[in-house]
Structures are given as C-alpha cells and as structure tokens.
Length: 173
Image 1: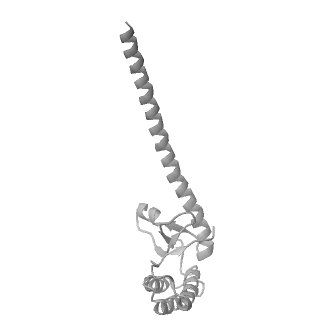
Image 2 (image 1 turned 180 degrees about the vertical axis):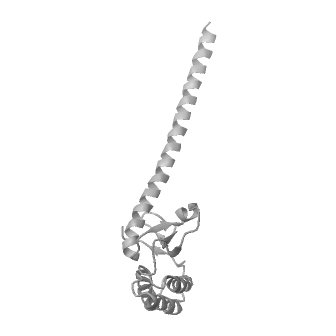
Image 3 (image 1 turned 60 degrees about the horizontal axis):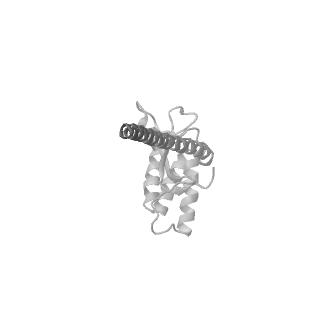
C-alpha cells in the first residue's frame, strides 16, 4: 500500500513538474511574442520620428514592405540602425498619395535619388552628391535628397570607417 501511495505521489509530482514546465514554456513563448511586439512598436515609434528627419509623410520598414499586397509606389530611403539595436533595417517612403502638384517630377527625382543612394552605399560620395543634386534640382522640396547632399559633403570631408556598410545610426527618436 505504501508503495502504491509513493507511486501515486510520484506521478502527481511528475504531473506537477510537467505542468510547471509547460507553464514556464508557455510563459517564455508569451514573453518572446511580447518582445517581438515591443520591437515592432519601438520601430514604429522610431519611424514616426524618422518622418520628420527625412521630411516625408509615411515611412515603412522592410518588414512591412514585404507584407504589402498589391503594387505601391515606394522609394527606399535608407538603412538605419535604431537606438538599442545593432542590425540595420531598410526604410521606404510611401509615394502613392502624391500627385504632380505635391511631388513634381516624381519619376526623375526617384531615379536620381535611387542612383545616388546606390553610389552613397558604395562610398562614391562625389558621384552620389551629383545624383542627389540632380534629384533636388528636379524638385527643390525633396528633403531626402537635401539630407543626403549634406551627408555626402560630410563624408567627403571626414570619411566613414572602413567597415561602414552604408547604414545610418539613428540617434534621434
């Protein structure tokens, strides 16, 4: 009888351990989901601030871009590293809501900007500067082009580190 009681206790104890372990695993899973959601909220908050820096209305991350269904007019703006993170994320400006009045010469601006961004990432700052200036000449209100003109001039004077991969570290919120 004692042996049966011991086995019953052991089984109950094992069940309690299993339940505790299952609860721990479930808690870890929930926490991981919350951390991922928190990362998304943090990035969304940073992108909201980035709209002011880049002078744009809507910025989305590469993750959002990959989830889009349909065709949207987008312009890649940058690869940024947000505060508290070490991996860069590509960001895009949504251009769909613009018309010829709100974004004159959009195709020309985007073409020159895209070429400038490619050259910028290759550390070809003088050539990139020329493309960004052409984009700004096509639309004098294109703040991203003006921002990159400033960056190119800075990097021409003080080059980035040798291991630079074209990303920008966001220090602003």
